[in-house]
Length: 284
Image 1 (cartoon, rainbow, N blue to C red):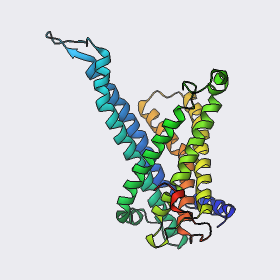
Image 2 (image 1 turned 90 degrees about the horizontal axis):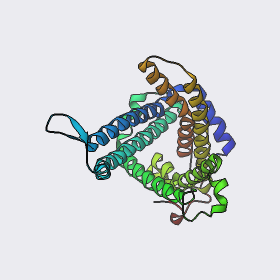
Image 3 (image 1 turned 120 degrees about the vertical axis):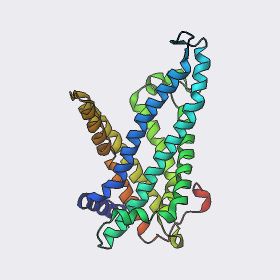
Image 4 (image 1 turned 45 degrees about the horizontal axis):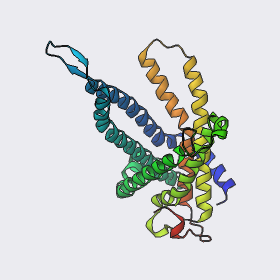
C-alpha cells in the first residue's frame, strides 16, 4: 500500500464510518476527566500538607512550607504517573478497538462495538507492555528536550532570542515526538497484527510515523483555534463549561482518530516483505 492510497482509504473510513470515532473519543473524555480530578487532588494534598490544625480548632500554615511541599510531592508524583499510565492504556486500548472495527468495515460487516471490545482480551498483556514502553520512551524524550530549552546550561546565550520563541519550542517538541513515534511504530503495528505476521517494513514504519506527526500537528492546530473560541464564549453555568470542554476535547482528538484508522490499515494489510526492519533498528 502506497501512502497516497493509505491517505484516501483512511479518509474514506473516517468520513463514512463515524462509529470509528467512538473509541478514541471515549479515551479523550477519560483523559479530560482524570486531568480535572488530578488538579483537585493535587490542590487538596498541597492544602493538607501546608496547613496544620491548632489546639483551638482552627488551621494555620505549617512552620516549614518547603518541607510540606516535598511531603505532598511524595503522593502527587506516583499518582501523576498512575494517571498517565491509565490515560496511555486507554488510548492504546482505543487503538486496538479501532483496528477491530476497521477489520469489520473492510469485511463489509456491521460494526459492533461490544464485539470489538471483547476481542481485546487476548491482547491485554501487549497493551499494558506497549503503554509502559510508550511512557518510558516519551519520558526519555522529554528529558532530552529539556536540554534544548533556553534554561538549559548547554544552550549558548547568543541563541536566547531564538530559543525563547514559541516556534522554537514547538519545533523541538514536534521533533522529539517524531523520534518517539519512529522508535515505537514497529511495536505499535505488531501489537495490532497477528503473531504470524509480525514483520514490519521500513516503508510501513515511515508511513505510520508520518501519520503520527501529522495527527500531532492537527491536534495542536485544533487545540489552538478551539481554545480561542472557548475563551470567547460567555457561559454562566458550570455544567455548560463542562459540556463545552468535553466537546472541545473530542474535537481536538479527531486527528488521533485518523491516525488510529491509518495504523489499523497498516496492520491489517499484508506485510511488505522488502526492507524488513532488523531488530537493532527498533525499540523492543
